Image (cartoon, rainbow, N blue to C red):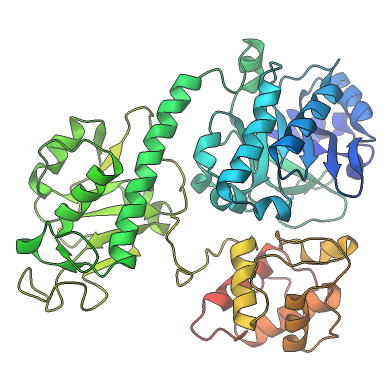
Amino acid sequence: MKELVIDVSHWDGNVDYEAWKKKHNLWGVIIKAGGNETSLGRYKDSQFENNYKKAKAAGLHIGAYYYTVSTSTTESKKDAEHFISLLKDHTFDLPVYMDVEDPRQFALSKTDLTTVITTFCDTLVSKKYYAGLYTGGYAWLNNMHYMQLLKYANWIAWWRAAWPTEAGDIGLWQQGTMRLSDGKVYYDDISGCTDISWCVVDYPSRIKNNETSSTKKEETIKIIAANVKLTKFCELMYKACAVWSLGYDQYQRQNIYDGGECDCSSLVIWALKTAGFDTGSASYTGNMSSNLTARGWKRLAPDLSKAQPGDILLNDGYHTAVVISGSGWNAKIAQASIDERGRITGGTAGDQTGNETNVRDIYTYSHGWSCILRYTEGTTSGISGKEPISDYKPTIKLEVDGIAGPATIKAWQISLKTTADGVISGQLQGNQKYFSGIHSVTWERTGSSLVRAVQKKVGVTVDGYWGYETSKGIQKFLIKNGFNVGSAGADGYFGPSSVKGLQNSLNSSKNPWK
């Protein structure tokens, strides 16, 4: 299934649900019930009752969401209890969601934010609600331990054309916005448009059967355990190949430590064992498959377009490597290759070239890959999406995804030598339409040192507040330096296409911001 869902609040005014059904086959709606914001305290959305009544009359499937800025378990529990009080005397056949998108929440550690989320959702589950989380794609992958949140319903915003396979196991994808009149999907906040999502899980049937989002807890625990081990496996491969100085030598292949030696199979087997996997008597490429497939791994056809983190790429006779991040042809792999002289033994210990062990783009091996080995015990598909690897260094390039989260902002701050906290602070909320692609912002009317530095760099008025002229100036600067900002050009609206231009400029060896 893939059904159209819209989300609405008082900002959307008087929504014509019947027209949406007739024109675009609308299936469901997620209604804002209320929230807790610094300037407002806890409140009920002024259109909650009206939206609920009209959606019911239109025969739509209905869920709800609650916007919160809580950064502690105490406040998160209070927010959940307030949400429950708003949901009382209403019925829902879609999940009820915690809306997490405030930069102050993303400033928490991954563990602390995950605990804040589980506190909120578990409070809902205790009252028999089908609880879920709404957040952005970048935050989902980078600001929380999302694998620990698989037991809840996952609604992820990722404004682009293609389904975000890297987000993993999600039931609802917010794709962008749509205008009722033309049905065109936009990837910016456009006046007169409504946020649209696609639902691929039959939540009404689950809720009818009295399931909650934690009904299959034991299965979820197995999935989490498998994913934790796979994530550790990827982390170890990354550390060995990109952080350590680990060399290549087939005759010294068990000396796996910083400054030591390995070969391709000994490294993979070591990382598996260290991450907690049973490898049996696996000792080289020729017996890896038989030992691993007897212990929870599945031998799959070597279709690299379907590769995902934790997959082992194997040529039974010659070579092996591990997918550590990304997916398909956008994946990164870690591997041990060859010694500094292009030989299999006899070189100096440690990585003498920076390439004896390495992280690189996925590739078609010269002898061909025999198979992909994927761990499936406790889950049907291994590790979906990617759990970001904690040891990644700033030298790893930004993902060009059109979402300016903390990583993009921090890279920009470092380039311009301002405070590097990953947040654009002190902005005017009324100007947000001019920089809708920026997802790490606070609103205090103090201005931002980064924005001042940017304004000075691009030659516009320096006041620390991002507005139309600042967006237009940045776009002109990027275009002048050879970076594409989308078909609209320098239009003063800094959305995902402009963000991609910014990310490409920050990744460039000729970074114009430095």
